[in-house]
Amino acid sequence: MLKVNTVKNNRDSVGLAVWLWPLYLSLVSIVMLFVVAGWGLLFFLAACFLLCAGGVVAWVQQNSINKLISVTTSQARLQAQQQFEQDARQFLASLNSVENDVAAVWARQIETGRAHSEQSVVELVGRFHAIVQNLDDTVRLSDSNQENGENPNAIQVLNTSAEKLHSMVHSLKEAMSNRDALLQQVGQLVSYIDDLKSMATAVANIADQTNLLALNAAIEAARAGDSGRGFSVVAAEVRALSNRSGETGRRISDTVNTISSAISEAFSSAESFASQDVSRVQHAEQDINTVLNDFRLVTDHLNASADELRSSSIGIKAEIAQSLVHLQFQDRVSQILSHVRDNILLFPDAFAQSDALFQQQGKLVPVDWTSLLDELMKSYATEEELANHGQSSATKANHTGSSDDLVFF
Amino acid sequence: MAKTIMIVDDSASLRQVVSIALIGAGYDVIEGCDGKDALSKLKGQKISLIVSDVNMPNMDGITMVQEIKKLPAYKFTPIIMLTTESADDKKAAGQAAGAKAWMVKPFKPEQLLMAVSKLVQP
Image 1 (cartoon, chains in turn purple, blue):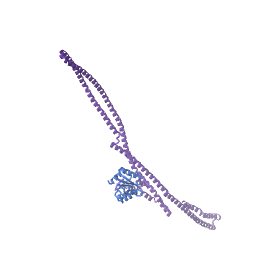
Image 2 (tube, one colour):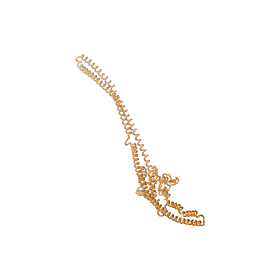
Image 3 (cartoon, one colour):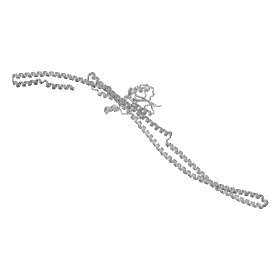
């Protein structure tokens, strides 16, 4: 088109300059004739002739120039037309390349991205679900152990041990109490020792008195003479018996004294041991309480840690379970990418229609973008796609209908 | 014995999320990746309920519901449509095909379980 305009402009400028030259020459000739010959009939006739000749030559020249320009312009227009058709074919060929190569590549790239994303999210969901199950098992096991008493925790062991140890201390205290009662009974034996001593003294006194009686009897028997001889034998035997009785009384007294000393020593030793035992049991009880308290502090801490761990497990489980719900975004992303992929493949058809019209009728018809956009909108399934398409809120509301998440029919 | 529910969706991740929710609630689950796949897996199975997407390759959800309703064994099996579509015309098409409920993604698991327990026969 530019070339055609240039030719036309050239024709205008060239035409003015060339085809008027004969007229200019005839005017110059008339002026020169006037200078040479001056006014006159001859001059007038010559001038008319020159003017007519100049006009005729100028007219002839103009016609021939116009013909030349017309031929040149037609040739230029034809060349421009051919060039335009060649350019249009190249352009449409490049669009064919978009159809066959670029759009297909875009669609494949989008599909690859969508598939990778889908696969990753599936793996992610699987891993998250495994974590949730592990946490669930841990919490359930912990609850089950607490309920059934299986695998008792440290606090239960501590409480059982404390109970057993306190029971043992109680048994020791009971044994000590029994031993005190026994000692008390042994102490009462000491009072019988005095009785035994007085009884031994009484025996000795009786023996002394018997000995004295036997002595008197022997004196009386001696006085009686022969008639008292038998009696003197009896008196001697009684005296011997009284001596033996006195001896026995002394031995009893000695034995009682020995027993008394032994009992006193044993009692004293037992009392001393009892007092030591009380002190030992008290120390043992204190030590047991100290150990149990220390152990209780540790178990309380462990128990608190276990509770915290359990509580954290429940919290993490809930968070991950919620994350699983949020991973549904992949479905929306996948749908949107699938629509973009499919819609990209609509473009080649749209270009193909323009191409076919050009090939058949030689007309370049613009792509029908409005129909194409309407076609794209039909494929949308999410509100985001409609919003991105630039739908007004009213149109969008009509399209999306009710906002209820769940409807029963 | 646990009730069996079929999940039909072309998105593997969504099938997984729905399965986790249903298995956690004590249901057995069978998965189908589109309407055609679901119909082939349906035969011979005792299914208490079907949860299906709408937009799927090979056979879409609405067509699948229409086909299932032609099968005497599954004529009365309740079907929940679980989809990103929320247009009234789509819902009407689902209802006309024989679906019992329409649920829009993304869904809350407790809401899905509520709908399932409401529709599954005791």
